Image (tube, rainbow, N blue to C red; front, side, top):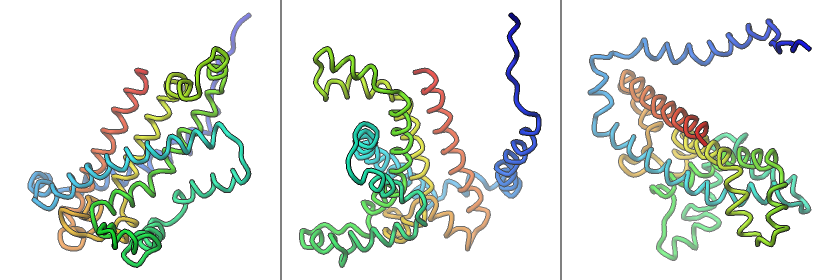
Length: 261
């Protein structure tokens, strides 16, 4: 029997091309605005290098925090049933739809000097707001849902057949989780971690609200771009391209490593 070739409706190509152009054209426009003879000097100034290194350092730290907190959250949401689970899931995903500035205000009223927990932390000698720690916390707050959503989807699609077999053979829950569950969803975990890293790298609103903008301490690359836009638009465009390049490299490398798994 002759197999029929599965094709796509031709009309889908039009909105697909328009969507691709909608994403690509602004990037092309930025490329046309860069004065390439000054590009090296623009992106290697002291303030630019400090902002880039701080962004990379805090984004890595917040991604690690997202993994440590997000993996248990995703496993609990995907592998258990409890009253109010839908509400808890909505709460976890809330930073996805909240304006980042609102997230920064919420963090400020929680960990600021006069905040819900900030006063106690201040008495103990630990000031969180307007520090590098605040940058990491702001980035983690907005990036965490990306990892949870990605990993929960991977857990649900992988099913529980192998875990049930392992449990039937006498494996303890921790052994099943470490040796069966995690290896099964490793591509989903890698994808979620990359999304969280990319989101943390581009975080702006919550960071400037909760951490401020002090060079070398809390001024990340998006904040540096915003400030440079007021005084040197060429530098802002050049730094924006650096941010786009770093995000593109990270996503490309991760897709390759995911394909190799």
